[in-house]
Structure formats: structure tokens, C-alpha cells
Length: 258
Image 1 (cartoon, helix red, strand yellow):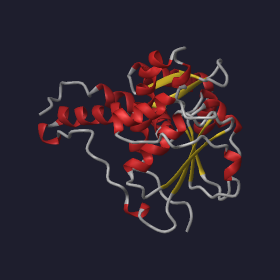
Image 2 (image 1 turned 120 degrees about the vertical axis):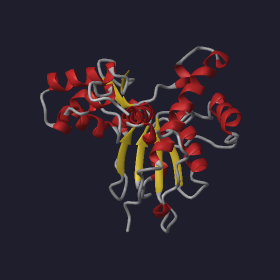
Image 3 (image 1 turned 90 degrees about the vertical axis):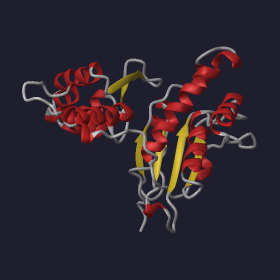
């Protein structure tokens, strides 16, 4: 067992601060920019930035440059890292509290209902990130969620590496899928609208039913390199990131319609 003279684990010391905990709670729902977090927690920007830096230094939060405005960054909570840190914290207190993170997530019972939960993923071209997210959510819910993807400026075809990474990494085939414009979904009701592209987030229209809006700031893998072959590792990274986020999403999504 832990000795009284031993300091608390770093995760406990880092997350025990009330403001840092509030920031983590907000980032557990969506990626945000600093000024948005300032509004959400109602604290001065210099104070929020200071505590975000501590969370980044602790490895719990990451930041990516916005593709919409390069002067901005989106902050993202690494939930897998939090799970591991929580497991390590329990073990530090007593070996009997050891927990192995990464246990399979079970589809919540309230998703298996009528009307089905409806989720829309959006990005600009609807040729890579959003169709990958669509396929992975459908896969992880065994088709029990009504999931769609669309874009603000859809490409003529899916990026070949989007189809390839789903086929090789997840045994999913989307080769017959075609990008679509989000204007074709006017009037459709969604429980969640999730943007994966910073530009699409800014331009995304309002949809019927006041869906929950969530943002995942994921760099476009198609711009990672000039050649199709060289860009494939970027698609693998993007797909892995999306898969992690989709699996975490399953624990919290619920229908907004009666």
C-alpha cells in the first residue's frame, strides 16, 4: 500500500485544481479554442492559458493549429491517457485497485430504440475524415445508429487512401460511397452534428431539432503529402484518432428526441 510519506501521483496533483478539472470536463465533450474555454469557465484568458499549459505539460491535453485560422489552436483531451493515469493512480494507492484501461465499450441500451440515434459527421470535402468517421461509428454500433456524413464542398470521389485504410485496418469497404453536400440533408433531424474539420465547423449550417454540436479538430490527411503513397501514414494516424474518439463517443451519446 501507499506510504503516507509518498507524494500523491502526478495525475491527482494535476487534476485536483478546480479550474483544471473544469477545463478537462469541457474538453471531454469537444475540442475548443482558448477563447471558447474562457467563455465556458468564465475565467480570464491568461489564467486559462496558464492552466492549459500545465495540462499540456502533464500530457493530458494536446493542441493542434486550426486549419481555418492559423493564429488559433484547438485543445483536445487525451481520454486514453486519462484512463491510464487513473488506473496508475488506483494502483499507487493499493494493488487491489489495479484496473486495466481499454476494456470494450458496450453500446448503451438507450441507443437500441426507435427512433434511432442519428449522427452527422461533417468536413469540407467529405472524401476522407467524415466518411471514415461514418464507417467507424456504424461499425462499432453494428449499424444500430443512423449515421451520415457530408461536406461543405464535396469532392467528386472518396480519397483512395480513405477506402484503403478502412479496408486494411478495419476490414470495412466504402469504395462505392460518394461524397455528398450537406445541403442535401436540409430538413433532416440529427441528435449529434460532429465536425472534424475546422473550416467546416465555421460554415456548418443549423439543422432541425437543435442537435448537439461537437467538434473534433483533426488535420486533413490528404494534405499531409503530395503523393498518394507518401500520405498513407497520415490516413492511418487520422483513422486511429477518429476510431478512438468514436469509441469514447459511445459512452456518452444519447437521443435528443422523445
